Each structure stands twice: as C-alpha cells, then as structure tokens.
Length: 117
Image (cartoon, rainbow, N blue to C red; front, side, top):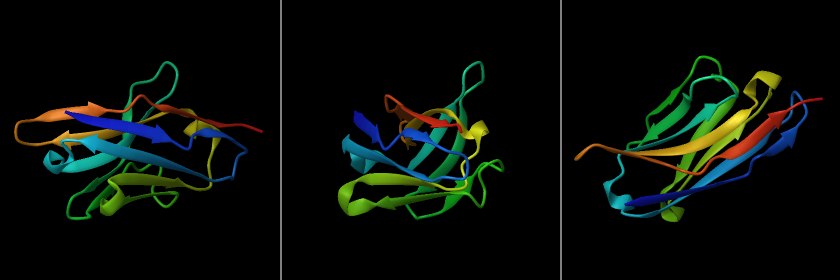
C-alpha cells in the first residue's frame, strides 16, 4: 500500500502562484510514476502533470508553460509549482501514484485550489 498526503492548496488571485506538495509513504519502492490530477465541479478528473522515476515529465496542454512538476526522492515528495494561475485552474487537486507491476493507482485525499479576484 502507498499513502499520499497533499498540502499547499488555498486561495489566490488570478496571476498568482501556489506550490502543492505530496508526501508518499508505505511501499514507495514500487511506484513508477507520480503525478497531479484535478477535478472541477461538474467536470471529470483530468491529469495535469506527471513525472516518472527517470525524471520524464508530461503536462496537459492547459497547463504547459505555467505548471512545473518535480520530485525530491530523498523526501519521497512530489511538488507542483503553479504560476500564472487562472480562474479555470480552480479545482480539487489530487496526488496520484502508479505502480506498474502489478498495476495499481493510489490517490491522495485532495487539496482545494481556488483562483478568484
């Protein structure tokens, strides 16, 4: 089992920045990929950024150039630096960890991000 705990959400004005953190514990040696997804009211959950054990990153088109995912392996923590935030970024942000063999997906409890003037 893998446990994920997010922190860093909050309210910010348009154009502002926030950094989310996700601390992983448990069977973290089995994790191959970690990322961040978000879910706005009435919308499906979407993956916005991910990073592999090798450091390869992937971003949704909607956040490219504004969000940066990174990881500190020594702290078993993944970060999402969000800049130039827009009202459309308002959502609950979830940390995700993926194990390939056998396949399993773990989720954190979520943290609210609100972008509003």
